[in-house]
Length: 120
Image (cartoon, rainbow, N blue to C red; front, side):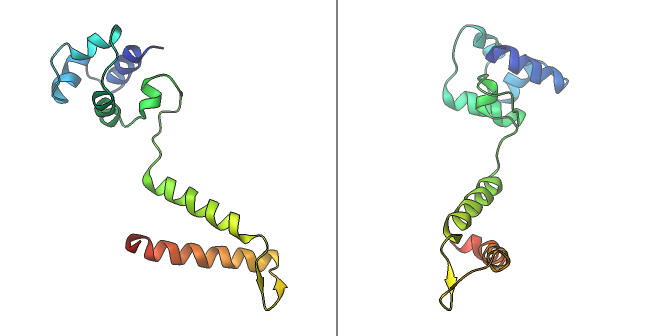
């Protein structure tokens, strides 16, 4: 499916048309129809993606996943990766942490990061 076809399909799902979407976004009435043969600027592509709450990768056909990862999703992924990569080899009092201890430490770290996240 082409970029133009995806935008047209998203418009239909919203019970609107390409002309109305273009006007709402501050484009010319027929601007989106030009996407049949022309590649839009990155800025305009992002405007349309934001309007429909999809990723630019979805519009470009690079993925069929319409969802956009939120900053919270990225934060949680980064935090999990950080904690996981630093758990191995941890010790307390000269003894390796048990799996139960590691799980408790993970929960404690997550609570601390969540509480102070906006201060970093």
